[in-house]
Length: 339
Image (tube, rainbow, N blue to C red; front, side, top):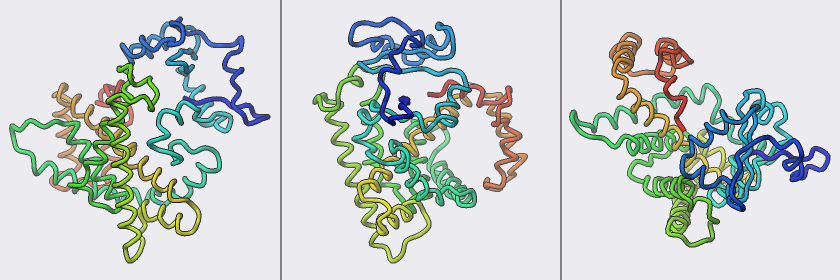
């Protein structure tokens, strides 16, 4: 949730969100607002906001916080691009996930964010990203080789394992296969902690519910794992060109403190693989339910690749043929509803 700041004071302008220009939105219960409606049907709630209220902005209240849903692309661009300096990520973001991601790039603001982004940027240059393709291919081939015909695979678990191993090797130069338990436990605990279909997600973190206790325990284990990775890199004979080396070098030169280094490691380890794993899971789900698309996809892969493994150079042709840039006849049309 973005919060607008007053450009003259650079302080959060609370009154501006309570003005006579408040956009329309659903009525709610005292104190808890629309919490029950959101928890009972998360996607349906936002769809109703988008369709039932006139204009392109609607407001809602959940657990004491006010949120705004922007549905017009121009408004989204205004918040994220055109007037980005006037908007911050907001107190709610810090309150909810600050204990997990601290002052890393996910939650950092202004010059702090720009400095961290500049430090990490070389790991995301185009030529560097292209070197990640063989890593993704080799890890995917290794996983597929362990599967047997007729075997039932829990696909989300498999995609989580795959994306985490690819990310760790590509960005950090670390083989985490067999060492993923801390990251995966933290990912599971975080999903449970912020599962908006559960009313417990709206309780403060300090309340000792079973979910909150597991969340804190898993974060502690994740930090210990991150410390091990950092110590291993610092003990290496020389630093490489991967993201972890760039971040460690920044701490050695005073450009970043150790806490921020750990926060960024947590951000990339968790947020960097979880979203991709979910997108892949829905991809296989949709392919499984649309055998005609699956058959066409195999044919196009065979035509472009033959018996060779895919490379970064093949990507433009594959995107063109499979329609992954927006063709109405292609699979990504069905991915519009992936959360």
